[in-house]
Image (cartoon, rainbow, N blue to C red):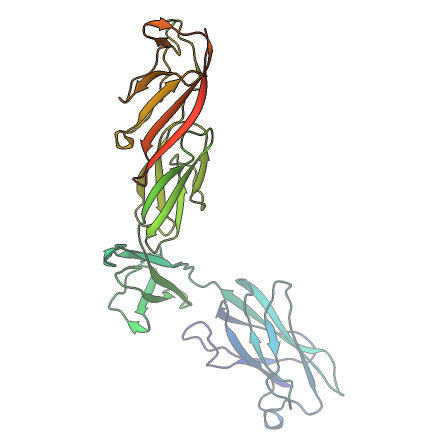
Length: 365
């Protein structure tokens, strides 16, 4: 009995190779080989010359890919025959596979043909989406973005398009100066296998923002960042190392904080300054060089601060309106006793409005 194991010429196999295998067998297996690319869809058939292409009269053909790695689909495109199938190889990994077809009829059983199929890998390309950095006010492009396949131009061929329009670039990478969907077709020059990928190029920008410190003079204060303009995806930090999506930070240490606002899409980051100001809860004016003067540090000239210090009965002991000055614990040149003392600070807040804060501290001797 003469059998033909045939893969159709238009089945996306190794370029310029059309596999046609003629096998003669009675009850033993015979071999042939086919080379295809990952993800191919191929048609296979036997006994097409018999019974008007329906195969041997009375025969039933059973097909199987004899490998557990096969994850594709074996389809029967014709209802009136089993001697032809279509295989969607899908995500079946590259490697060697055996396709077996066995024929059962009234005269002989388990006649089989086996085809060795080599699945070749596609070029690996993973472009990922990109962003053009634009000015947050004018929307002008600040710099183009690089789309790179990271593949060798000597081993692969490249065809680029933007929004479906072919680009005059056959390099492995391209500079994108406008938004759109960029596609690349990569051909392995050795195997002829082809891979396609795309990169959607959008817009992003640095932020325009402001920072404000809430609950000034309290033990715990809030550094609050407000983004007033920009189309980026922003994250925030007050130490330049640890970033978070939340633009709010609770801090308990006084001092100057450099706030960083970073665009996750890769555009420029910006820096702001936040001043956290606290007052000392006590002082010890004993001339030992430590805590001898009660003074609020980190006050800003823009605050125009004026501090008044009182005893527990409301008597004014000292007025301070110069930044960097403090109280040494004396009144008219005489040391006051250890006790709790109160202060009032009048200042201009970050909104430009007059504000005030009252609290007390301890003098220890």
